[in-house]
Amino acid sequence: MPLERSAAASDGTPPHDYRPGARTSTLNTDPDTKPAPGGRWRFWAAAYALLILLTGTNLPTPLYRGYEARFGFSPLMVTLIFAAYVAVLIPSLLVAGPLSDAVGRGSVLLPAVALAALGSLVFALAAGTGWLFAARILQGLALGAASGPLTAALAELEPDGNRRKAALVSTVVSVGGLGLGPVLAGVLAQYAPAPHVLPFVVEIVLLAPAAAVVTTLPVTRSRARWRPRRPEVPVAMRTVFATSGATSFLAFGVIGLFLTLIPTYVATLSGSTNLLLGGAVVALMLVCSALAQLLGYGRPARALEMVGLPLLAAGLVLLALTGELASLILLLAATVVAGTGQGLAFLGGLTAVNQAAPADRHAEVLSSFYVIIYLGVGLPVIGVGFLTTVAGLLTAVQYFAGFAALLCLAMLLVLARARRDISPTPSAPNAGTD
Image (cartoon, rainbow, N blue to C red; front, side, top):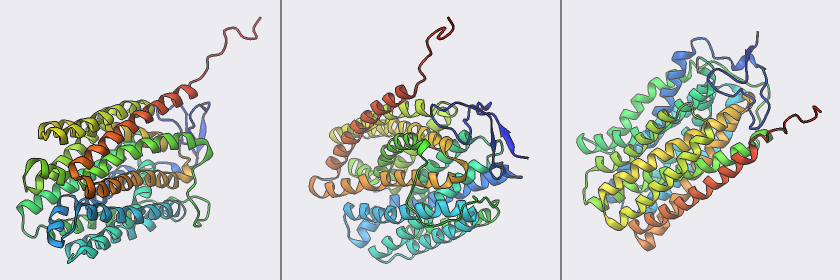
C-alpha cells in the first residue's frame, strides 16, 4: 500500500511535490520512495561514502605549495588544475544523476568509487604537472558521478522520510569532507613520511568500505528509460532552483577560493611554511559552516539563506581588510564569519531544492543543482588566479572578496523581493457574504 503523508508533516517538511505558493494537500507517495527496510544503517553508510569521496578530492589543498616547488609552476596553474577538475565534474553530474534514477544508485556509484581510488593512485605516483591534471580529472569524474545519486540516496534512505534532515546531513557531510581533506593531508604531510604519497594511500584504504557500502544500496529506479539529454528543471520549481542556485553559487565561490589560494595566502601573511596551518584555516571555515548548519536545522529554507548571505558578505569584507592590515587575527575572524554564512546559505538552498524536487527526478534535479555549486567552486577562482599574475595574491584576493560581498547583498535583495512576491495575499474580510 502506498505511503500516505500529509503535506503539513509533523516535522515541517513539505511533501515531495512541494511548490512555493501551492495549496497543501494529502498525497500518495510512490512506493519506490518509501524509506527502505534497514534504512538507518544504509543512510549513515551512504553519508560515509559521500564524506570519504569529498575528503579525497580535497586532500591536495595544503599540498599545492609543495607541488609548486617540485614542478615549478605558479598559483595560476593551481587554479587551472582545479578548473580541469570542475570541467569534467559538471558533465559527469549531468549524465550520472538521471542515469542513476533510471538504472539504480549502485550501478553508478561503484564505478565512481573506483575512479576516485584511481585518482588517488595517480596523485600518489605523480611525477609532473600532467599527472596532477590527470588525477584531478579522475577525481572530478568520480565526484560528479557520485554527488547527485548519493544526495538522492540520503533523502530516500532517511528512516522517517524526512527530507529536511536528509538535506542537513548532506550539507554537513559535504562541508565535513571539504574540511577533513585539508586537515588530514596537512597533518600527514607535515608530520609523517612521504608527504605527497601517504595521504592518498590512506584515502584508497578508506574508499574500500565505501565501495562495499554502495553495493548494498536498494535498487531505486524511475519508470522512464534513460537517454542523454540536456539538463532540465521541472517548471514548477524553476524559481526556487534559480534563487537557491545563485545563492549557493556565491557560497561555493568562497569555498573555491579557500580550497585553492587561501593556504598560500596564509603562508604569505604569516611567513610560516607549516603545511598544517593553511589546511587548518580552510578546515576552520568549513567547521564553522557545519556548525551553522546544525544550529540552523529546522528553520525555513529562505530564512536560512537570508541570514547566511549578509554574514557571508561580512566575512568577505573582513577577508579583504586582512590583506590590507596583514593581521592573522582578522583572517581568523573573517574565516569564522564567512564559514557561518556559507553554511546557512548552502543549507537553505539545498533544503529548498530538495523539498521541491519531484520524487521521480530527484537525482537529476540535485545533479543540476550541484552543477551550479561546482561552477561556483571553479569559475570565480580562475579569475582570481589570472589576477594574481598581474596584481599579486593579496590584491587579487581583496578584489575578489569585495566584489563577491556586493553580489551577496544584491542576491539578498532578490530573495527578499521573491519572498514578498510569493507571500499569500489575505482575502478581503466577509467578501461575498453580504
